[in-house]
Length: 375
Image (cartoon, rainbow, N blue to C red):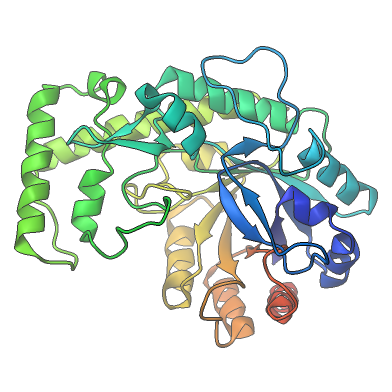
């Protein structure tokens, strides 16, 4: 199995990172070039314990002409091109570097431009979620991608949040975890903004009213399980088709900016209704990419997801499983888990995270990498 480890630019530029990763033996390091806000621990740093990225930022130079949406620059890193510096440092050390690009997850731009964000059926805005139906968002995603890869030698381009985000996603001091039943979260993740509504072939006000009524009914039942909604199937399929059209248009705009032959890796999910960092794959997505990364942080379901994907996706598309070594509860036997993923059909292991996993968790990364290379 090929092993890709993820890292932030400040991780890579910290003294000791490169030799540590060389000893680990990963096949590729994915460097975040466009990323959302975060407070990231720095357990390997001798001078600090965390980097506070106060807002979403672009870790390449922000210059020249942009459209309506222009990314912010980070003042918590010393260089205007910390992402490029990190990639070049890895290349010089003989470590293949990938571009890790987060697209529609950007609270900074969402607050500054509330007209381009996802809105639920109640009209509530999700400022963390730029809506793929908006041409400004597609233009921004394409520009970010083009500027991220410009002038760099890259082994892959890894696209995160290349699609819609929804109701269930991390926000400041999140207080919604466990509140919504899956069916409620799915309905609250359907974007009803003006751009999305314009793509529907039925009256938008009627659709919004139906969604609101169904959400209220599901909440009133008090069922936090998996009870499904009662929307007419034709309405459900129409809403899904509209979402998938917008996602396809977003991805097409992004891919059009990449140089020929570049390896494209897409974070995604088999369930077409999933929103977030790994959004649901559209029917045409496998035709456009070389690999699909599935969420594998839960060992109970990771291998099952890989097996289902291997059955559903073309053989030429590599299946990768995204696992973490920094969860609150470590995987009891990470080597065995990696073996299960390989047996299910995973050709790649994506490791989170080369900067966040400190000395106490580094052995898990070593074990996972060794197990991946044995399979």
